[in-house]
Length: 224
Image (cartoon, rainbow, N blue to C red; front, side, top):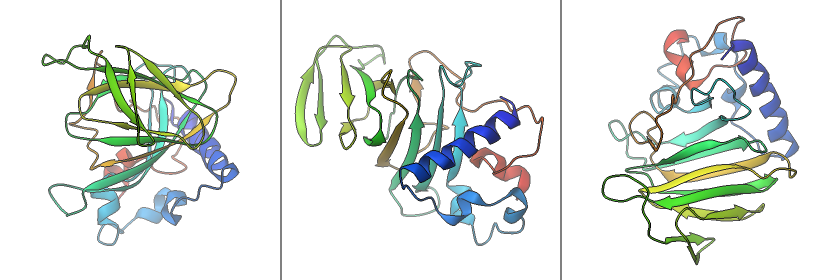
């Protein structure tokens, strides 16, 4: 992805968060030069990979298959005692996050506002393939049973709990607008805890056609 595209997407995301009165921490808006010399005071942000994150999953078409998010808080099993994480995401209409599960992380996915979020679900078997068993999930604490490869649609205010090993993909329902999506979970480790059914690229290759407006979490190592 081009850095200019990433800059534009972050700018648009900031406006979307403002529209929905979702406030980010002050350092979300720091310029690259603001991070210089701050490792000692910002160690948790840097080591636990907080902040802006964006991917096209290697598709080359972010709006068809991609996701932009901001990790607000996260633990680090090697460095601290925090055992939880929180993210805020923006999902566009028909913009797919591909089918995947987590070996270690249980998570709640929450529709915080905007359009409707469609989530496709399937259990995994012992070989990490799709299972033919019914899908049993809790939506806002209420148990639902779905057929294999079933789906649910979350309206604003609704949430679903996804257990370890539960394949899931999601996208914004067509005609309903972008979705503000929250995630509350166990400690997050995107480098080691994502099992995509069809392997994808989690972090994009960036073409530096202009300077970063705000740093992605993956940029910290090059700027701090």
